[in-house]
Length: 73
Image 1 (tube, one colour):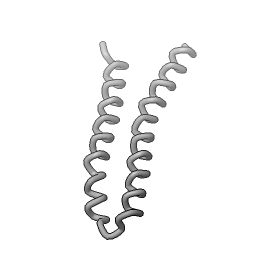
Image 2 (image 1 turned 180 degrees about the horizontal axis):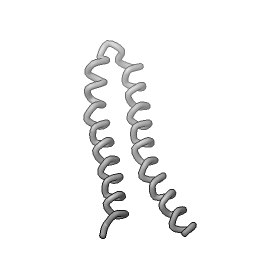
Image 3 (image 1 turned 45 degrees about the horizontal axis):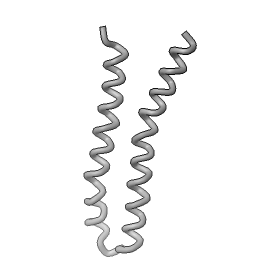
Image 4 (image 1 turned 90 degrees about the horizontal axis):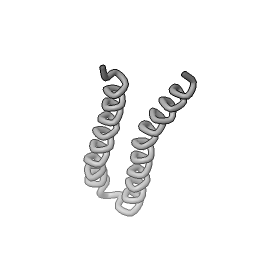
């Protein structure tokens, strides 16, 4: 039982780590662009919006598929 719990924790941690790294990378690029072009703040923020939506959809899909795999009968 202990090994199953360890595998569950590792898989769940990896699924949560992927969007965290993605959002951190997107945020770093956002800050770089805002530093270079401060007058274009709304345009830079809108360019990041689609990337954040994609990361959110992928992370929720991974979590839901993991959940469905656990409760499959």
